[in-house]
Length: 77
Image (cartoon, rainbow, N blue to C red; front, top):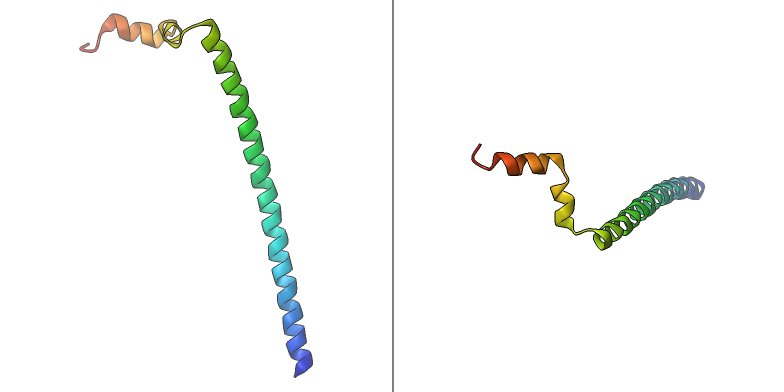
């Protein structure tokens, strides 16, 4: 009876350790994804700051074809 109980507990421990390993793996993947996304966002923010220093945001929109077309056609067209 005690041996069966010990075997059951050992199996439960193995199952829990497997789940812990799976969760740690998923956590590692999530952390890597978040770090990559943060690095991309940080790079983009740096580019935007550079653009902001050289030109105003409004002048950037004026150079976009769709915006220019919208301005020439008007809202009521």
